[in-house]
Length: 627
Image 1 (tube, helix red, strand yellow):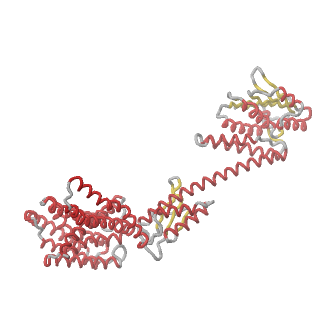
Image 2: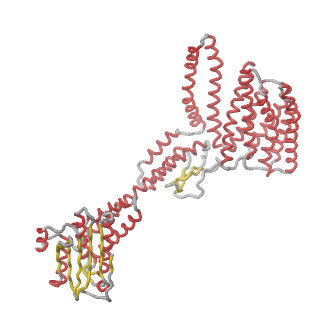
Image 3: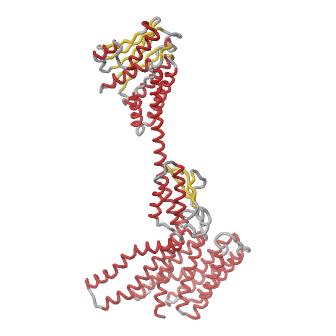
């Protein structure tokens, strides 16, 4: 059995080097993120010192067994760290428990004495040890014994009842340092391999205890899972090189044949590594940490359960139910929550923000498990991933609801227009205008949202006026022309500013009462059958003026005009619904005193629709408005 002690000692040193390297990375990440950590910089320095010490020891083993020589630099690094470790361990505990220590000056004095003694030993004894190639053990074990006594004294004297050294952690740490001190005393007396194994195991137990009680979120996921996989891989490779390689050499296989046989024999280990890591991780997750799903399975389960949600409330309820099943804990999905930061201690709830467009829009809160393992770092990472998936689904659902709401509003607008048209036979808004306007607005939204917003407002103004016009027969000409202006603004958005609009009227006709929708119908006809039928830029002009006791309104467009047959139909009262409706209403109100004429101005290339009716009211002197 004694021949295996060097191998076990080497494996233990290797595992120590791996574990301390992992923990060093964790400490550096926390310090870089400026997050509080037990022991602060002193603990980070201690962990990195242990990592360097074990790596240095492995390098020395390799140099002696492979190169058959020692390197002074490796010896110097090992001696420096070895003689400073006792003081550094004492410093870590003093730094952590200082606020809770009575007689703080006494402990500070003891720390200063230990640091001074360590420096004296380094200056006086290390050069002698380097020349002889042997570590001076008596001063070192004296420093270890002094540090152990001081640390145990701190743990006993500290009045801290919260944090790391509350309850079980304090007892484990006292027991560890008692064992550590006992092994330090037995080492120079027995000089046996079991003592060496115990001494190398104590630093590993120390970092496990500290990490478990201060970084439990990462303890299993980093130290247990990753370090265990590395250790098992290292053990397997060691057995391989100890037996398989020796067998290959015994067969006297040399050259490329021996290299090929060696490569083929190591290939199963290479293939085993990814599978072994997954199986080990799965075994720890399911049997030790109580995780029912792997990350991929959890994602599929979560997304499949949320596919049928048709509202934000239903999506939130289903998300909470499926997250509870995944994490085996009570889960709340909140619309808004203060303090959206993940809990760093296992006793607190874990909160992960829900973000929409990069801004917090709620949170997912997972309560601690009542009976079961605590949630760890991989659980937090999985929760963050599922929260992102939930954010994506919520954003899509809200966009869908917004689109449906917009379509519903559009349908209501069309319905209201149709009802007003059927109700009075005079609130005539062409359905094509609505759909063309909506298409124009949709085209403006990505490129010119401000223009799209203004067009929506103008479209709303047109429909508001249409609905009011269907409830009353008479309106002020000023109100009618403002609605016409809004209508033409919408059409300009549709024609991409290739439509020129001109409205001209004076103050003397602003308050004249006219039948509602008269001018609106003529303008709609001019845009639909006039400028809408040409590919060149269109022109629509509306001119209103008083001529004696008569109000004259002209609507002009540069469209192709009516065909002769259409003009004859109009004169015989069989024309289009809009123009026929205007003529009939004018005749009903004014008889032969009002007229509607459609003419072609060939000189200007424009179609002119002219309405003449008696003035109903006249205001103050004229003031011309042109747009």
